[in-house]
Amino acid sequence: MKLLRVGTAGAEKPAVLDAEGVLRDLSGVVADIDGAVLADGAALGRIRAAAEGGELPALDAAGLRVGPPLARIGKVVCIGLNYHDHARETGAQPPAEPVIFFKAADTVIGPHDTVLVPRGSVKTDWEVELAVVIGRTARYLESAEDGLAHVAGYAVAHDVSEREFQIERGGTWDKGKNCETFNPLGPWLVTADEVPDPQDLSLKLWVNGELKQNGTTAEQIFPVGEVVRYVSQFMTLYPGDVINTGTPAGVALGQPEPKPYLRAGDVVELEIAGLGRQRQEFTDA
Image (tube, rainbow, N blue to C red; front, side, top):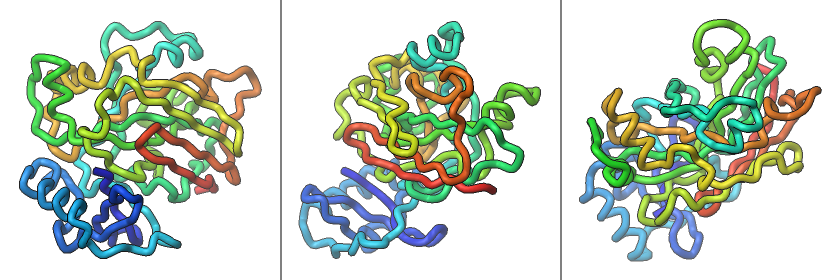
């Protein structure tokens, strides 16, 4: 299923994109799309039956804002340097273990919402990423297969980053990762049954119409199941938590000087095969 949330920020209602591509209202079936729903097999069954029954009210998508496909996100765990080609372009050694950092849940916005270039920023960068949404509580998982079994679904994420804040201002990466609006998510939460192999997905990103990233999840150093297993050794993952699994080559940081960092007025578009497309206009904070 392709689950999403539509409406004004803070007042979104749940919806589903049916097999014919028609947007349908789910608010009569569930109150929202969140971790509690993803962990509830009966609720998911009701959603599936309603979507397949063809009786859900259709929504007019014209002019309707698409919000993040998940409400009440607990935490956003991010994996750094998780693509062989991205490590090569930045001159970094592939990590022996996954690199973990966090984004605050309040960085998450809708897939087409405006992104703010932080005040004083000179190195705002783009990163298309596969987001993994957890559907079952995960503690000390024993295998990558078990990791995949705890995944409710997948979405497109844009891990916007400010490289000067991240790398040159001291401390950990958090300064360059947690600026307001720095995690567009969606448009859909695609349930795991529609993604038989998360290591066979193409990712693309354009800046002002120019293709910048053109990669595949087959390049991941640590595949999705292993990422979930590994993270569960250090923290408990709950339904509704999100893991951003890294970005392929093609970011501004890896380009020759002068590096083409983002400025107000730029437009970024990104997509992952089967998971939908995003478009953001950038403006000054």
